[in-house]
Image (tube, rainbow, N blue to C red; front, side):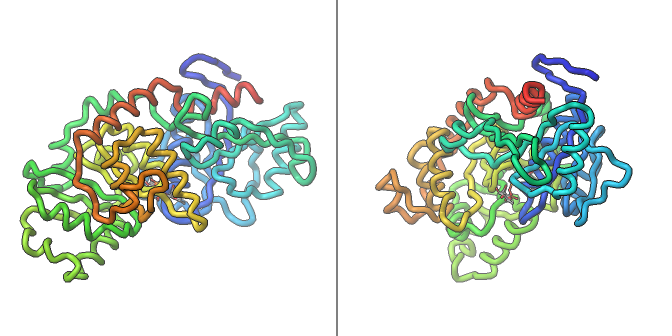
Length: 381
Ligand SMILES: Cc1cn([C@H]2C[C@H](O)[C@@H](COP(=O)(O)OP(=O)(O)O[C@H]3O[C@@H](C)[C@H](O)[C@@H](O)[C@H]3O)O2)c(=O)[nH]c1=O
């Protein structure tokens, strides 16, 4: 057994990581990124996913030391011994028989086992309070085990953010013009804007704004919901009058689904990125480019508080804050001017870039999530 605790922490353990795809790509995107990150540090990972289809475009080449397993109902475990660490992403409810097998297996080896639930990313203060809390299992198939809650986050009191050790190096050697050409994007030096979103209420306004210039813009629209939303706006021609007058200032390209690595390249290539959910938000931060976030909506509007907390963490200037409120269809509780505003403010890319760069510099000082979760594993195994 290999156990080294330094900045490139390694435990030499086998992790069973479970992921349920509810909708969109955030759950599988984070689960995959975590699996690859652990494997790159010398861990072995079995990545159990109930719907593996998105991996065909997100990660078509797989990754060394990550075994992808289709998580069926009932779970197929013939001939498999449970791993050393059981990790469920986003409370995805593991099969009682797998938990029981894990409890028996660790018990038989005289180990206490380690069961981690990886939570959603948020900048809200409850994250610091709850990060790392144990919840001993008293009854049922996992009785005797202890489940720990691991919260990603933006402060040193949280589990941190997913960030590969070689990210800065890869960014430094990135050639934007070459990459765009390889991807078939005809770039004539216009401002590049990427769009990854759900159905933002202000999408038509954004298209109007970009079409109004003064600068020419090429909008690179990601596959799926963003493409459907833009297409719907364009079909609704009356809503987009200025577009038809000043069409030459806005060109729109529709992208195929990209690999996770290429989605990073897209963010690095653009002058402004629209991102959504959580994983692309973190990637946009690392890209050092101005961005606007569409938060994943929750039924009880809990996402409003989450958005406020993120903007506060970012120390977003009023124009960026107002843009986010309108882009997300939220009335700000803290900024009375923004709450009265219904028009998208003008893009202020220089000042938005400054806050992103500043936040990124600060966040890079903290240990990344993979380092932290491995350290957590070493401590609690
Ligand atoms: C557009 C694009 C994205 N991606 C990747 C980047 C990310 O890993 C992933 C998108 O995940 P997110 O940015 O989180 O956005 P999302 O909206 O797809 O994910 C959401 O899913 C819900 C189920 C969660 O509850 C939400 O919190 C949220 O994470 O897809 C590609 O690999 N290729 C692409 O072309």
